[in-house]
Image 1 (cartoon, rainbow, N blue to C red):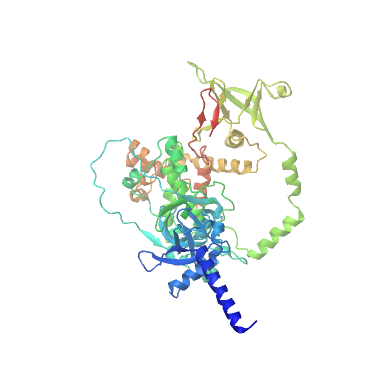
Image 2 (cartoon, rainbow, N blue to C red):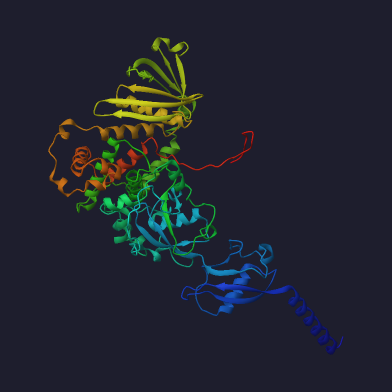
Length: 600
């Protein structure tokens, strides 16, 4: 074939492919959001359906012609409410057509987060990652271990309270004190501080303010949390004035409590997919109340934030407690507030310092030796059982409360009682099944009254039964067993012993020494604003002097505690409350005319 014929054939081939390309390609409009410009710019790019996402971003960057790091940018499809993160997928596979509006935007954006201590921080968070992963990044930035315990919560709109309208002007701008941690966020292409997540060692915190000790301070050299900012997160903040406390939202009904839980974000979807934009405000809270490995050496920030969430739950009455318990919590708050303001160093642990590597090796050696294997086998095969003499009372109309003593046997999730111990082999007088029942403490430590109130659901209502224990140790064992049984768990459950210890420590804090109770009030009472340590309901019930006297009376029993010990006691007492860990949700059901449930 001559050269002229080859040129004609090649030109015909080029003309054919160009025509085919024009028939199969289209113009795609992409908006580019630049961090230094106000409104996004639009770019039209000629694409085909077999172009992959990575190629589209490459064409887009070449057309923008701005030299910068584009590695954090990704494509967001607004109509489909999804990110196009799989760069090897083609436009046809994603279903992108010419009418699609794509936004080329950074994946990490600034977000305002209100921490459990009501302090607001501003930091960059991944809006493209799932919320579970985004919370992990946030906790790395804030030096909080066990990020799986936390999640993000939408702020609740201020409800319309059933009160008389007051003529208050709320048009004044609210200036919010925000701690800016924008530079600490982890972004692609930058070296992130290893922090608590170093693979070789775990940093030890300074016992005074919770910042990393000098030997590990260099690990945090690129973080804004190294000095003053870490104090904000690891040290308890000043108490809220009673006027502001009264204005804060307080759950008044189960519907209000359910409305709070309805605001939890979906952990399997990204922030952008759930409708959140840059500079929005969310709440970072502990969602799953199973706190693993709380270590004062490494968890200064985590323990303080956990204490703050428990404190606000008590003050705002999100969880119910008795009057005696309220003043016990108030005394711990007063003690923690006083210790936080003190300039004297507080020891976080009385244990001697042990090298981390040696401790890990010793732990591994014990595990490999199988030192606990016999105990574990025993826990699996043996069915735990409680048996002892208790007093029982069934309330009736127009009768005095007369307790009768019986021999009680607690096994699995039921209680059986007999006339005496010798009759335990025969049929019981009655067997009480506690699964699904309500367990209410009936305790007055000062008068040595240790009672358990059981509300057992039956066909015609609730069966009300009172049990009376002889001492606090007996009460702790039976109360812990009843609480687990009400949730369908037996004493073989791993948390039974921990529950018993929590109840015992809770009772010890409430056990006030009569000699100390009669002691003269300290001069520190003049400096204490007692209305900050109790819920607004008690502020209305008692005068300031009465509140101060009762808080100081209870403070005598906790005055020798260290700062971290007082916080840990507060958390343990919070965990011992009957309503701890209970969440309320609104469930709507679809029922037909016959009363059959069709759908939840």
